[in-house]
Every structure is written in structure tokens, then in C-alpha cells.
Amino acid sequence: MATIGNALRGATLAITRSRTAPRVVTASASRYFSSNPHVVVDKFVSSPPPPPTPSAANAEALRHPNDVHDRNANYIDEDSRSMAGVTASVRHNWTKQEIAEIYSLPFHELMYRASTVHRMYWDPAEVQQCTLLSIKTGGCTEDCSYCSQSTRHKTFVKPTPTMKVQEVLEAAKRAKDAGSTRFCMGAAWRELGNKKNAFNHILDMVKGVNGMGLEVCCTLGMLNAEQARQLKEAGLTAYNHNLDTSPEHYPKVITTRTYEDRLETIANVREAGISVCCGGILGLGEKETDRVGLLHVLATLPEHPESVPINALVAVEGTPLGDADADDETESDGIADVDAFDMARMIATARVVMPRTMVRLSAGRLSFSDAEQYLMFQAGANSIFNGEKLLTTDNPAFDADTALFQKLGFVGKPAHAGPRVAPTEVTGQVEITQVKGMEQQYA
Image 1: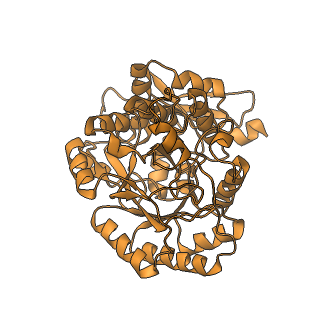
Image 2 (image 1 turned 180 degrees about the horizontal axis):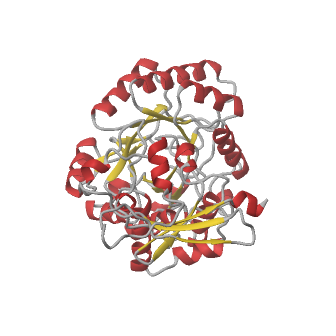
Image 3 (image 1 turned 135 degrees about the vertical axis):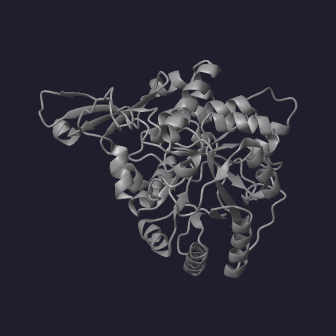
């Protein structure tokens, strides 16, 4: 990995292509010193290596580290990337106005920009496949107005006890056999709290699924720092804890848990060294400013989430939002009024402002055609949930997703393997600007 990392960082000296030796690996670099002599800016475009020319086959051998922190460390000196008239960078100081301007671009311009950014940082042919299992369904005391599992809403969901460890491992094996490489377990409760017996069973589930060669994700409500540490020790790869919407719209959707509670759990997970999976839901009655607001919170976290799921509300009868959506006399108010263009616009904006984050096309996929889903992949999505259920709502079956992957020419990302290095990076199509000594400059 160190060799790959060093290769990807590029040259620190300017090498010019010789007219008499056109096959020499070269870099076109511009370098200048600021008033601080410890700061060096280096721009380079890696030329294709000597024959054989890079191809999809041998690019498979070039992968980033699997750990997101190790991946980011490879690019600690990187300032920006440019290709085909588009420049992108990993930033944490985005303003709402900047994100709003990107979100509001004409659709064709936004799609071009997002698709180009996607190709600068990722291999667009590789898509992660995740399976989500509800290990404890219903009986949740929260009042999330979209959720069918709340005890405050009269829905089709009937509470069930926590699944046995062996049942979960059998489900994980079926998911692995169907092509999934990340197995996610969700429990319908507010927080782990003092559920010591249930937590011990979950730790056994994590160890067992991890031992099968799958990456493991959990969504268990609020976590404290000690619980996050134990999950990490058990082999947990990622933890999902969505923010759902903007801080301003959030109180209209949920009152039993604050936005700050969610951010605290995310911080506990991040500090334990677990990858953060955090996104939101479209169709909660929010305005476009709320969608921008959610992205602003995510893009200004100390570390961007490893993955950002974008969900379209699946309205369930008996929930406040589901009943409002079913009211024919109610004018369109943004509740479940989400189409493929809304999803693509949100995914594309997320891709531009968080270039190294995996963007997951999540709930609501069943309502979109293959062509509409392709639009979302073009916008920058590179992960999906597969399997017939997402907790309690319907989702495309494994066979349907296998056929979709074959139709679109996609391949699944292997478990416990980092993502492929972008082919455009391997073949020298991307101009990379590095800034070295930033710590000295801004100390």
C-alpha cells in the first residue's frame, strides 16, 4: 500500500517529457514558493506508464487502503484535482451559499460537473453492494414522523424481539452468496442505553459477520463512547446514524431526539475509529434550502462521512407523513413528492462537495426505473442497498440488482478491500495540485 500511496502522491520535482523519449513516465509541474519557504505547490499530470497501457484489468490491482483514514492520509498534501474544465477539492469550509449555488445549477451542468468529479476520484464502474437487516423490529419509543416502527403510530409493523445470533449469521451468509460485501444490522430503539444482554448479542453478531469476510455496519440509535469502542473492538466497520434533514426542519419531523444528540453519536463513532455512515431523507416536507442545509452540515464535519446514504421517503400508512401523503386534498408540500431529478440533484451536489465520500442510493429505489437509477449513478452514486427489504419497506430483489449491474456494466466492490484507484488517475488524465507544508503556513 505504501508503494501505491507514494506513486499516487506523484513527483515532487518537475520532469519534462523528452521529445526523443516519449515513453518516459513524466509529470508536468508548476512550482512556486510563497513567502513561507516551507510551502510548495506542485501541479502534475501523470503520463501513462510504459506499455502495457493501463486497462480496467490491471487497474484492478491498484486499490486504495480499505481504512478511510489511511486513504485520506495518502492525499494529505493534495489541494485539488482538475479535468475537462472541472476543478474539485476536499474541503470542510463550505458555505451554505456555495452549496446552494452548486445545487441550483442547470441540471445538465450539475450532472456534467458531478460526473466529472466522480471520475476524478472513483472508478465509476465499481459499486458497493450492502444488505440491511432489521434484527429488532418495531416497538421504538421515538416519534419520527416517517417511521413505521414507532409505538406512537398505528402501522402494519408488529414488534418482534431481537433476532438470535445464529439467525442473523444465516441471513448474512445468504447476503454474501447473493453478492453483498457489507452487511448492515438495524435495531428499532432510541439508544442502546443499559441493554447489556442485547448489546452482548450484537457484539457476537458483529464478530460472526466479520468472521465471514463481510464488512459490518450497525444502526442502533444513540451510542456512548464506550459502546462505540466495544463495537470497534468486535470488528465493526461502519456505523449508520442519519441526520435526516436540516437542523431547521428537523424539529418538524422528530421531537424525541435532538439534532445535537445525533451529532454527539456521530462524534463518538468517529473518535472510536469507526467509519461514519450519515445521510438523509428526501420527501419529509422539506424545502430545497433544507436539502442544502443537510449537505452543509455533512460537508463541514471535521471529517466527511465515509458514506452518505440518500433516501427517498417510502410513505407508510399510519405514520404522520404517510397519512399526509395519502391525503388527496392536500396540496403538494414536499412530502414524498420526490422524483428521479430530485434524487439525482441531491446525489450530484453531495458528490461535488464531498468528492471522496461514497454516496449510497438507498431507500425508495423500487419506485425508480433502471434508466432513472442510471441517472443517479451518473450523478455520483457508487453504493446501493440490495435485498428485498430495507428494515420494513420493500426494495429490489437480489436478482433484479444482478441484472441491473450486468445491464450497466457495473462490478461490485469486494469486502475488506479499498476502492479502485480512479482510472483517470492511473492513466494521467487528471491534473493534481499538491500543497506541501500547509501546517507551517497556517501555524
